[in-house]
Amino acid sequence: MDVKAINTRLEEKLKGLEQRLHMLLRSDVEFVELIHEDLMSAGGKRIRPRLALLSSELLGGVPHEVELALAVELLHSATLLHDDLVDDAEIRRGRQAAFRRYGNAVSVLSGDYLLSRMLYLLAETGRMSLVVLLAEAARRLAEGEVFQFQVYAYADHSRDNYERIIEGKTAALMRACTEGAALLGDAAVNERQALATFGHAYGMAFQMRDDYLDMMGDSKSLGKPLGGDVREGKITLITLELLAAHPEEVALIIRRGGKGPGDIERLRALALHDGVARAVVGEISGWVSRAQDALSVFPATAAKGALLDLAEQEMVRLR
Amino acid sequence: MDVKAINTRLEEKLKGLEQRLHMLLRSDVEFVELIHEDLMSAGGKRIRPRLALLSSELLGGVPHEVELALAVELLHSATLLHDDLVDDAEIRRGRQAAFRRYGNAVSVLSGDYLLSRMLYLLAETGRMSLVVLLAEAARRLAEGEVFQFQVYAYADHSRDNYERIIEGKTAALMRACTEGAALLGDAAVNERQALATFGHAYGMAFQMRDDYLDMMGDSKSLGKPLGGDVREGKITLITLELLAAHPEEVALIIRRGGKGPGDIERLRALALHDGVARAVVGEISGWVSRAQDALSVFPATAAKGALLDLAEQEMVRLR
Image 1 (tube, one colour):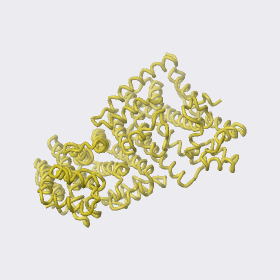
Image 2 (cartoon, rainbow over the protein chains, first blue to last red):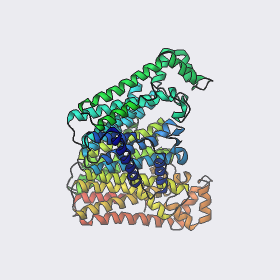
Image 3 (cartoon, each protein chain N blue to C red):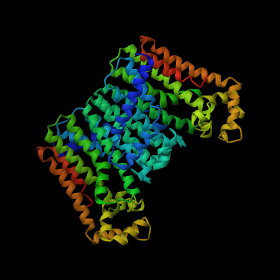
Image 4 (tube, each protein chain N blue to C red):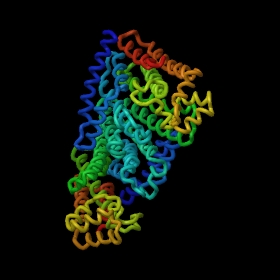
């Protein structure tokens, strides 16, 4: 089988996953169903299930890969529902954030419903060590989110804190996707470590890229106006670097939420002119390489190729 | 050992539980610690751990009773943090609701942190069937909360819906406390069923009493003004019964949120005069009896006496 065949199979598995998710989230309570339908129709790229399923392929297919893929997606979706309150995001996955449509209350509690279904799925695997792995990922996710809030409350922005936030918010769960497959497949210690490193480094690259494109991408492929983070008062790697290079001007723009005429364009121009953009892309590239290098313990197979490709995709639109 | 000795031991165990809870909730993130300290100092009656520990005593002591007791309390505390957004409660456990002090965001995410620690505790028991039991309780809890929201959105108030709400919000988790002990102790099927019934019926009585006292209790022992539910627009068993007896007058009072002069006093007077209060007390008493009767499969021991007493306590201040 080649990489293309693996990816075709992956898409088929993902379709099956949607079906299973649909069954799993059925509820007698109409309002729970509304959130459920909203989540299903919003879709999303299902990145975390992809990571889990490709890691499983890499190991020749592990038992309960479907339960793992669904569990990580449910944890992610629950966090989105809980995190909408925090972020006040105007657009999430291309649709109005669920809480705007049904209220904070239903959002939070429906998130809890998803978590209860995740718990059920974990139990279905019969692997208590997977429960521990997900408990740890969930802990780091929650701590990462709260830590982000704390950093903003204290205006305690730094590179270290930025990395700590995205590690908790994104990398910890992505690591659980890949390491979870290793656990279910009873992989050797070095293989499990390799997959854990891949998931973590991929997660760091993924979030850094997401943050980078928010300012430096193009609004068409982004599906929303550029500079959303600046307007929402979010500080990401690129703004930290810009602040370091031009403390006064950039701080001013950030204070007024990028709302002055040409503010976002000015930040973009500065980033491109001063090599800030290039430095951030270099950093993302470093994480992508770390992810890819981690897989060197595995023989060259189509599944490995697909994972290497997945990581490589993070570099698309950046160079 | 007599009932008194059992209860003394219970209080000692509960003290140990506070210590363990304190260790378990430690976090490097200051804002998580703030919520944690808030939860610890607020205390609460730890009813759910009591149910778990006394059920364990009834079975002669079951393995991992402490983990069960902590897990149910964490699930309950997380729900309180998530549910504060819904209820807009001014006072919760005698202190300002956490979210008023630190914001909705930190509350919701700290609730998720508690859930992640619950997951970890469940794993510590090594019993996957306990994970399933708690997953089911968590599902019913979340569905119950969302269903409550739905009933209010549609103004779809009825006795059936009231019972369905409190079963989900309260009885399902209390049942998990008692049935969880049976599971951990590998109790016989009839004993497990008896404990499940006890927890469920006790939970129904507990919530009905709570709702009853909100209007019919005395504000001093309640620690807050009477009629809080009416003022918050909550419909409970007593208001449903009053509505049935005096549709126009009571509907009027409810519509204006009990804010007219003497409104709450009027509702109390009506309830006492018409036998509505007595009917509701009779209903609570029925659930207490069902709980107590369920324990008939167990021989008369001090632990059984303590559980019977616990249920009996629900009738104090009602007669």
